[in-house]
Length: 451
Image 1 (cartoon, helix red, strand yellow):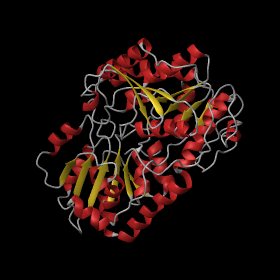
Image 2 (cartoon, rainbow, N blue to C red):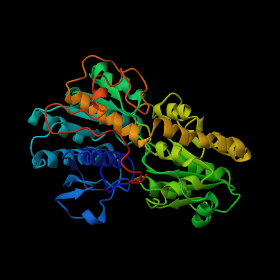
Image 3 (tube, one colour):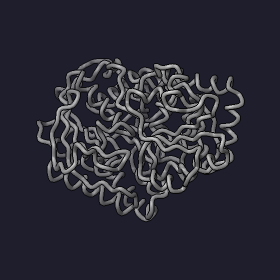
Image 4 (cartoon, rainbow, N blue to C red):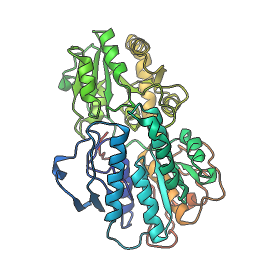
């Protein structure tokens, strides 16, 4: 696997890459990961890895090959390009030392990771399977990053290079499919493989968690937990706090925009900036809030679906999504039945939705209760890992030429038409051409690597 983000990173793509690699290792496979230095979401290198040029480590039965790269504290198109170039250059100069693999899987949005994965697969003559978590070309155009529109075409070209060389392409949401097709990938080689909820259910009573957090009883708490980046458009939460002093808004996490948001907030007494929650406490922190917020800039349509949504749903609290209607995030919230949509970048509209839920606790509880149901039925870890088993098994079996993508495949087992022949292989049959043995798809413990 090539994944710039990996454990001990606790947010974003890292937990999914880690759980997938460890799942395959637990099933008996020898798994190698080419990864970067832990830096997300703070965009600062983890102190344990400061000054490290290269490192090989064993983690959860997986051999992780670390390569140093730049880490831009502030985001711009140029700085992001330098980051990607450093990942690519070091990966090409020092590929992992290992035997011939059965397949190469890459986690995108890292353009460098996608290109490295394609190059490694070609070098060994094995199937290449990228999994698209975000679309960088679209992100450059939609996220608001400085200089982004000028580099969108270059990013799209790099994505096209990586994706066209794939045996199969996994995408985490059906809204990505048209974009991937536009990059030159035949629709018959695309499979929808949604992420899963990688956190356990809350374990403490809400009142106890609120007391530990210092949130007053009876006061409405609106919580955003996760990355504070450009595409999130978190200014809407700052302005909502400014509009209603009685509302307590909590921004918990880290990211490139944290300090700028703090400056924008000034001395607002009802806006708290908190560090990321400890791994063990995270589910209870989410459940302690009255309303969970997911926000995106109005320009963000089809380039990402926030990974925090799977954790939000598991917490059992209602979600207010300040996002563009029709985008992937809006579709997920609507499909779950666990929240309400409001227009993006509209503080008054967001505040009205939060207040309506606070004034109708029965409706708020009913919405929140739909989240865990959605997780159990469609976003369980067992189902997510089984989908990935099926994707890899089909690629190893030479699949990908016959079946077009058939829409949403969120079920707890692989779906015919969405996975083709590989679906049958994921049940535990031997994979072709090597030592890889797909796992059974059963959950391998309910621990979590974070947010």
